[in-house]
Image (cartoon, rainbow, N blue to C red; front, side, top):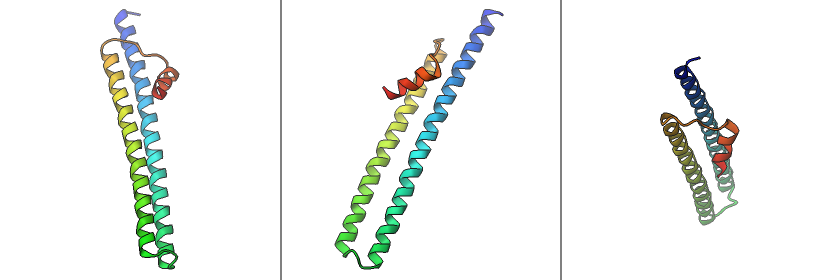
Length: 115
């Protein structure tokens, strides 16, 4: 096998590793976004139901909504920032592959995410 084909094969396998890692990051982001959205909708339905049954006063109701929204905004922003840092790691991996470096195994790349 010629050296050129070997280099191309290594580059293709490295790009496949990056694709698998990017798919994992995207699936994680979508999963967390779905959980946060579902929990927010659930809490809003409970809050509205309790308000219509006059369990809460107006002040308690709006305070409860404020706490719910602030918590979910904080958690959503944290998840969004984490996703963007993951995208920056993907960009760095692309640059490494373009410069001719070989990437470690997928399990090693996954360990790099936790660092």
